Image (cartoon, rainbow, N blue to C red; front, side):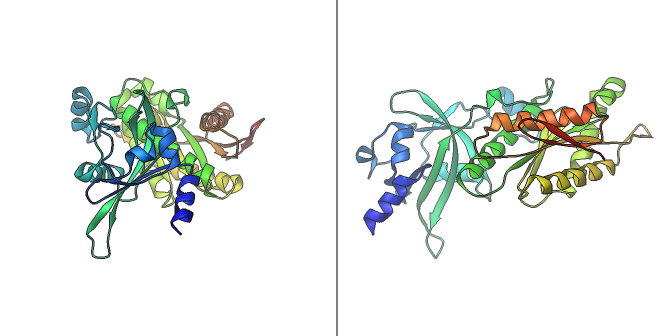
Length: 319
């Protein structure tokens, strides 16, 4: 039985580390060896290597900005050992649902490896702490992902980084499980004109009104977030692209009900939507480019429309 369990752990594509209640390593699978450069024989029975993981600590600039709007920085400046209380703190950052967080591994040969990490505190039947489980995998290089225009807003940049983490996790789940993964790229048609005639503050108020309205139409497993000054991304798990199209049309209808007034003027709102569904072999960058191109096709067609992306074409659904 022990040999069977060991073989199953080594067959996993994700790296897995389990420590006991004293912080000593009891599981170190083959993927962990390959990703960290530390061999299993030299790691079992010992604490995690000093400074193995770098996690998020706001720099002074980002901390000040985060305090102003309630956000958190995403700059990895502190080196910590993920044992004991530190590991529980990282799990709290990930949230109650065990959301993965982005961090850096310090490889045995000295270089840094960007990873996504999920932490779990292991407890017995009475709630006592038994140890810690950490699973992780290499993170996509988000520098090449297409984004919407974000201006110089630090808050928007942080929201985009949070959406990137969710995109990475959903993309990984689609690759390794049967969980469907689709993306809707939404552009508020009035955004650019309102920013030009009423200023950036008016545009920001409008986007917040649209986001509140869109949240009413979200499924429990979905996530919506800003992807530009006038743009949103929705991460969806509809079973197929046809259902994803229907969902996009419902969200477009929801957006039209958004109540937005500026200095007494009621401004009607519509969105242009691009829809795409992940297929095996498609990279995350390619997926987002498909959604962006479909959204632009909706804009080109006059706005207030939903377009479906294909690898070789874009089909317009009239609203």
